[in-house]
Length: 233
Image 1: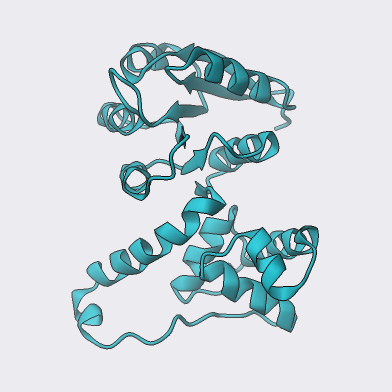
Image 2: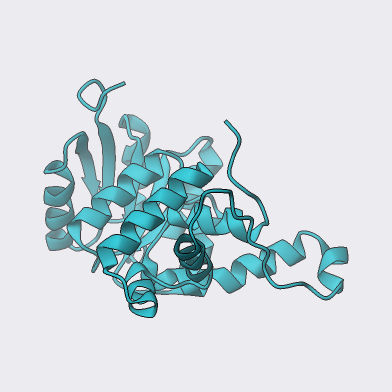
């Protein structure tokens, strides 16, 4: 299905009219994406989303009448929810965890470049989990904690260092990039650490995402931290 046959339909929620206007201009300028509705808070969105054909809800986190997390919880009570992507001006790990624990597809920042916001919307629709690079290192300790809680007997035993399953064909540099991703470093930080151009690191991260058969860098990290290798096709 091409983007012209069915563009990604976004419902945008933010209590700042200027932010709504800017985000709408970002998304409407992208090929294959259209903003079909906007709302000024979660309660307004909750009333109007069922009437709209929506693929993604892009919602602010902190709003006066109903915030993003509460909007997501209320939508979930009704049944299947469109892909829900939270966007905030604050890098808050508790809010991020609240969104993810209730089925949100990601947590991004309003300060991210236009291209990254657009890409995040595409990744959310594709089924990926999207986290801003600035918030990634805050999430990793919580992921480790969740893995231990899900298996108390395993958690009671001393845990080895994370085991990275590296497929054949990866270079030593690509393995280093993978390890640094799992340590929560951004592309820029990895580039500085390894003395590469950031664009080179970005290409290697894209290759790793493709090799492991996942749709985002967070899904890549979760796969690797769980000791899983590339998906078999």
